[in-house]
Length: 153
View 1 (cartoon, rainbow, N blue to C red):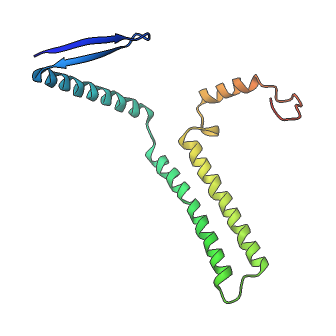
View 2 (view 1 turned 60 degrees about the vertical axis):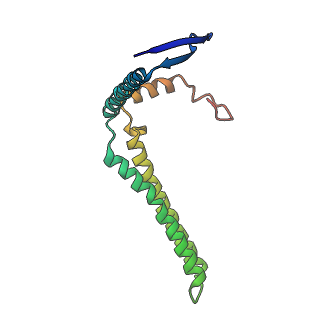
View 3 (view 1 turned 90 degrees about the vertical axis):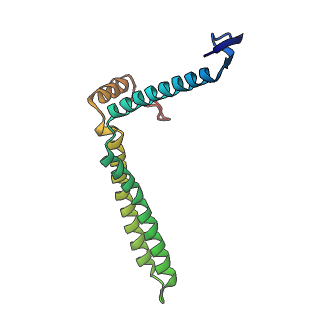
């Protein structure tokens, strides 16, 4: 087996450009070493992912809440079709009432989607005590009562 490493240039940052020469047996050893290194790295990444404990039910709930926004599109399309395609067009009051209903529905869908998003990423009320304490520490350094007319702190 033969593996030769020849440095062709040393870079300022400490790295180097090199040429690797090897025979067939050396190639097999390098490939085996590379595969083992990749497997070790994949195992370590899997361990790190397991520590994060992704809540799949919460993830699916978030996806479901996002999908509910499409029902609002369906509602708008139905309103458009009903107003334009029925024998007698909808009255102004009927259109206004339907639009107000769709707006109310959109606000509810948004509320629950945002709530699920915050639960999923542990934001706002769902943040850990450590994060809440750090947030409070940062906010205490801000002068929120400076009566600055442009609203900046």
